[in-house]
Image (cartoon, rainbow, N blue to C red):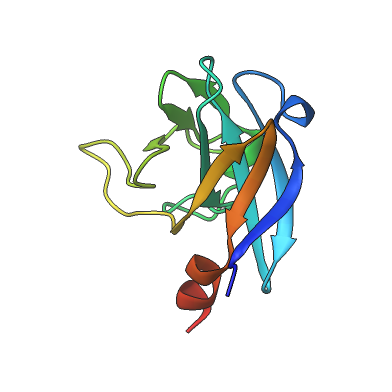
Length: 110
């Protein structure tokens, strides 16, 4: 069974930007790095639940817009000395389309 869902074109996300999709009862922020690598995290900072999608992307991190916590895009974990992690989801780019791994959403909801 194919568990990858085509959600939108990579071009729909600005470089160093994000776009939010609602899937499986979860708001998921899809981030695009300067080199077009994509990352998917729950759109909720591990600190106080701020919307990570509204933060500033720099390198492979995003700064939460509420309290400036830095979160690693690959793992969803806050950068020390801060602690905590946002849930991460499987995502990839295929033929210019962003594909979301639905099986990782199901595991997160369980």
